[in-house]
Length: 493
Ligand SMILES: *Cc1c(COP(=O)(O)O)cnc(C)c1O
Image (cartoon, rainbow, N blue to C red; front, top):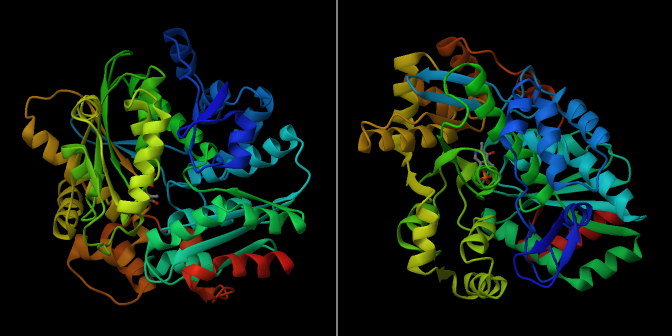
């Protein structure tokens, strides 16, 4: 399987796509064509464990890797999870929650980032790369911690994480700033996530930066959700959820289902779209946003317009105005027109807006629709589900639940099963979830955890409880213009 760039001009192997992260010229790597999963393979996968299913899907894209080794890497990665890596919970007739937060950092990013170090290390070996790898990550909160945890003390790899100084939750910040490991560094960047992500993207796009780093025997790579190595492991859980619905006799093989996905950078929901392109019977994908509802508007109008206010919400991992992975979707629905995709991305950068044609919009609308929850609606969704079923969800999942409920209200006779994707453990956002469930406000996160436990009796993950005792190792705050100086300091250390 070869990979091409959304902005044209390149054709690379899977290993190269993963090692490089981004193509020259800033395009994203996409598979040359979508591999198919046959009915026979679906039946075989029914019997498989999660790591076996994941390895099967991955190998369809990454056939330059060794199949057996991929399987053992998946087994090792998902052994770091607490039980089933992607369990389905039935909360109502025809409504299920796919819990993707049983990994080491309690957010869905672990699904891919526990595996990425292997994909990258091995990718370097396949490509014959001798230099050390430096991973740069811009994070809206959860990616940073999951990447740090995944890459800590990895051989020949250093990792540096940048987060917006006033754009992550206290818990997320603590998780990152107390990170252990000899090869890690964490820097706060003044501004919001988009400033942070743009600054990091600029380093990646700069030939001058690359040259300077090569003088230090260092090569850049990315663990952001634009890296195909992040996307590929995410495709697997859509297959797995479907197969679990079949084995638990909730659906018959071949029935179509819907997913509602809490969306920020469009990576998670894009993986669902890729699964559909591979033949998974998916009917509709509901893209859920918070008040930063640029995607809701885009799906409705075909206009992607950043001229709007940026809100800081209680679902910070979705506080994003530039959804980078959307480039891969508009590339597909433009008929894989790389010139047009490049032009639109240039417009986005220069004019902060672009539009797709009515035909393209209609093509997207055949699969996607969008909705959003404001802060009160998110609270209400969490509260309603808790009161009705006893199930506790986090703020991101709360936004998704609101969008799913809206769908059912508009489509009362819809019998299609709905899977709401749950992206974080509620204890990652303890004060906000406590407020939603009980109406109580507490100032301190750990008090929030204690009270939330008292209210819900849900088990508290140890990794969050022990944060309190860990020493803070990283306190640097930098200007978004000076990030490369910080990179050089780290490399010279
Ligand atoms: C990253 C994240 C999201 C958004 O996922 P994308 O792939 O960026 O769309 C949603 N919820 C949580 C908890 C996250 O960490």
